[in-house]
Amino acid sequence: DLDIFSDLWVRKLLMILEQLKVDLNEALKARDEIRVSVLRFLLSAIHNQEIQKQQELSDEEVTVVIQKQTKERRESIEAFRQGGREDLMKKEEAELDILSKYLPQQLSEEEVKNLVTEVIRETGAGSPADFGLVMGAVMGKVKGRADGQLVASLVKEVLGG
Image (cartoon, rainbow, N blue to C red; front, side):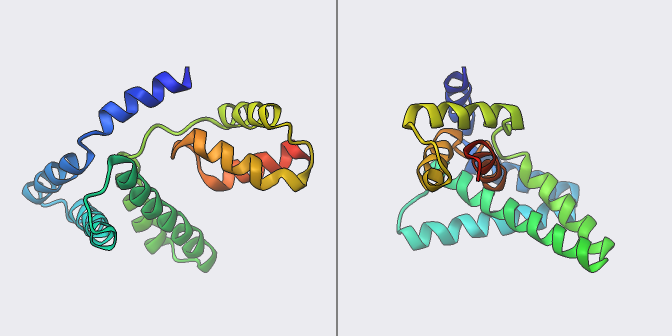
């Protein structure tokens, strides 16, 4: 049933870049400064990636750029939390919330754990030495619907690492 979800998400994703541009225009009209800032920064990152690749990005590649942006926000939130900068932490959380709307629905921890168990069974992995093999296969199956750190911790847990 995860494959059906993936197919539906891919169809929804087909116009993500166009949706970002429409949302930017709406944010400009509404004078929503934080949304304008986040969407402009994201579109700029996508554009820079297109220049680097010398071609338009596929929807999957656009999703990777969005995931990178969300990961950076999460890291910033944690750093600001540790530094006691509540104001900056709140700003990053607001930006993360905006970016998250453009990502596929995330899998629950239980769903990821089931995938990890399935991959271990399929690959015959049985020790912490197989971490890379299992991790690569699971990340290929989740396709942006789970955080890499969550997947890594669950792979270690299930493999007994």
